[in-house]
Amino acid sequence: MLSVVSSMANYKKSRLKDAALKRFLSVVLVTLFGVLLLIVSLRTNTTPALDGLDQDLSGSDDILSINEKVNLPKQNDFSIQLEKRNWLPPRNLDLYPKLAKDHITIVLYVHNRPQYLEVVVKSLSKVVGISETLLIVSHDGYFEEMNKIVEGIKFCQVKQIFAPYSPHVFTDSFPGVSSNDCKEKDDAGEKHCNGNPDQYGNHRSPKIVSLKHHWWWMMNTVWDGLKETRRHDGHILFIEEDHFIFPNAYRNLQHLISLKPNKCPDCYAANLAPCDVSSRGEGWNSLIAERMGNVGYAFNRTVWRKIHRKAKEFCFFDDYNWDITMWATVYPSFGSPVYTLRGPRTSAVHFGKCGLHQGQGQSAACIDNGSVNIQVDDTDKVANIRSEWDVRVYDNQPGYKAGFKGWGGWGDDRDQQMCLDFAQMYHSFNTSLAVMSRDFSISIIPLL
Ligand SMILES: *[C@@H]1O[C@H](CO)[C@@H](O)[C@H](O)[C@H]1NC(C)=O
Ligand SMILES: *[C@@H]1O[C@H](CO)[C@@H](O)[C@H](O)[C@H]1NC(C)=O
Ligand SMILES: *[C@@H]1O[C@H](CO)[C@@H](O)[C@H](O)[C@H]1NC(C)=O
Image 1 (spheres, rainbow, N blue to C red):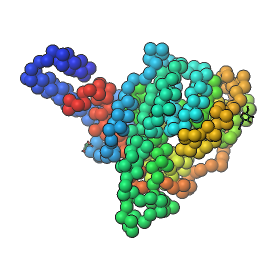
Image 2: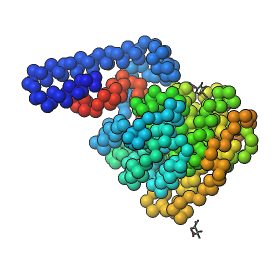
Image 3: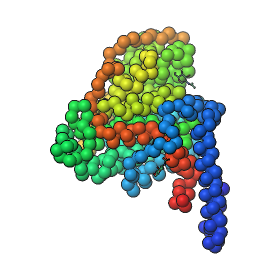
Image 4: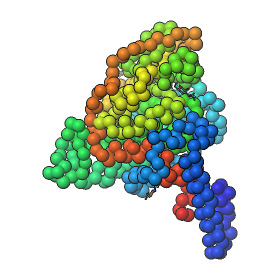
């Protein structure tokens, strides 16, 4: 296909006649048709060797059949522009042409708190080993100030992705607000407005649902969409725009991941920080297995496939928080406790004081005096996990679990449907084509 694209370029230069164009087009179409047939046959035949870790994709019920539609909302020009940027190669390839063989990809998901992001990026710049890996920054919405900070990163390969269906990108249609949407506790029948209320009678608020949408879109895109990561067979670490990362985080995580199979076969993940976000750790001489936390969690593709298979549980649960949704529905549906492994001293701190989606604009007050005051001791600058340590297990920790009904905010059919569509978008016939085209060249799309 690459040669098709380059011969296309030559063709343009040499200005051949119409007939040549037609011949060329038919070559392109026939080739594309061949590719489509190939995709179809790959998707329908069970070929376990092909996808490796992905093998349970084929024939499993987490994948709708090829004929089922993915009806993602109609995009606007801006969201299309954003989506195109997602297929650009990482930055800093000149400085860091190669990733380390066993690298742990880092995904940083952000909204719009530039003062926070600056702190996080500064902390990442001091992480030992960071230059070995790829940092993906996933943006919920488009904000110049946030971009500038990311564009300034020089300490590793960086790839920016933008959630093209972020409610922040749609000013007058779903997933943003449309003029005829019900608001707050409107009665849809009486007001003739659109929307389904949540379990507490409230209609959707785009700003609030954007968090869960972004997380789910990002997970699907990183694991199954991006060509940089969709074949990554190691762990991926997820952090947020208000997580301060200690210099030893990356090396500690590498230790935890290598110890996990033997020390804690029941652990699904490794965490940089305790589940209790106010704790800095116990300081014991042991590893700790506890319930999954939401600060600095890393897991592999096997675990992602398990999560992805629970798309319905995730998308229909009436809570706008992705993490509470996971604790209350997805993890309990695995059938056994979902533990994570971590060290006895934290390697990441959640420093946000303001709730998410506050603290924008004039938000200096969210961080005291414009910087965070997090103490980093000498022991936090070097790997401080020992392989001879045993594992202490916390059983029955408090927190959200199966049976919790959810905080609401997620009752609208359209949000639930878009969420399901995100789970399908890289697995349906249509988008397989889209992903593949993106790999070749964006310029080939207008040809069709
Ligand atoms: C593919 O996408 C088009 C337009 O977006 C849609 O009309 C069609 O039904 C989709 N086909 C499948 C098989 O999903
Ligand atoms: C991924 O992690 C899970 C949970 O720790 C583990 O059971 C599985 O063997 C791992 N998969 C690979 C391919 O390492
Ligand atoms: C900000 O800095 C000043 C001077 O260093 C200090 O007196 C003040 O307590 C700080 N404010 C906060 C909220 O930490």
